Picture 1 (cartoon, rainbow, N blue to C red):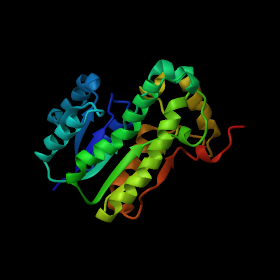
Picture 2: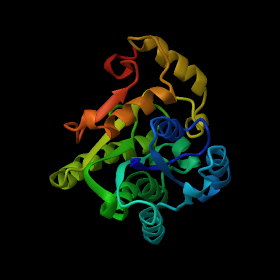
Picture 3: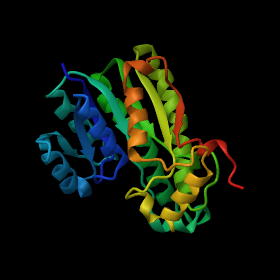
Picture 4: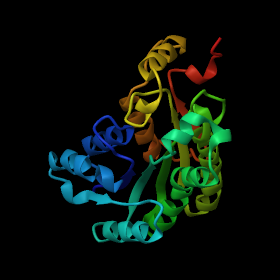
Amino acid sequence: MAPHYLITGVANEWSIAWAVVERVLERGGVCHLACLPANERRVRKLMRARNLEELVYPVDVTREDELEQLAQAIAARTDSLAGVLHAVAYADLEELQAGLLSSTREGFAKAMDVSVYSLVGLCRAARPLLRTGSSVVALTYHGSQVCIPGYNVMGVAKAALESLARYLASELGPHGIRVNTVSPGPILTLAASVFDDIEGKIERAAQLSPLRQRTSQQHVAGLVDYLFSEASSAVTAQCLYVDHGLSSVAAG
């Protein structure tokens, strides 16, 4: 019986989450895609090319009723999820660019709700489908650990996400469910494109990294797929980097 996975955060074909979908499909898995309503048309087109359009679910992750409906729709097709990918984040662009001192209480709370609390909501809704051996993976970024200019409130949110994953791993661990985070190097995605000179930043990061290479969506997908697999059965509550060693070197 083919394993089923819940993948969130696909926006287009350059999304890290889409690379994970392709990786899972290649090895015979079944992917249920929860996407933002605004991205539904593009995501349906991607899945339609694989005759899997019926596995796309538009979801607002800040609404508990929609997360419950998502879980119910998946439960109608399978009784278990082998893995869940949390690849959802949001911050108001103007507040992100203005800096933390300019952030509003409402904007800060929204960033934390979408980027962090949604992992709680997702795990709670999917809990009846999670079994011994199920693996939850959330995408983070090194801006959670060091101050990266321009990352601002998202850095704070990713730090909270990593901490949350450790606590969820402790809570779900007795049930045989693992929770980890994956921290990629800089990658050109729709979300990253809002940062100034992102291509230049990515190239400089590649030159600084010990392996002198850019991180790709496929590199990240490989690590996520490993965390979904039996090979990582003893790995939980960890933040794993896939950045060609960039996080190990100083920028100077």
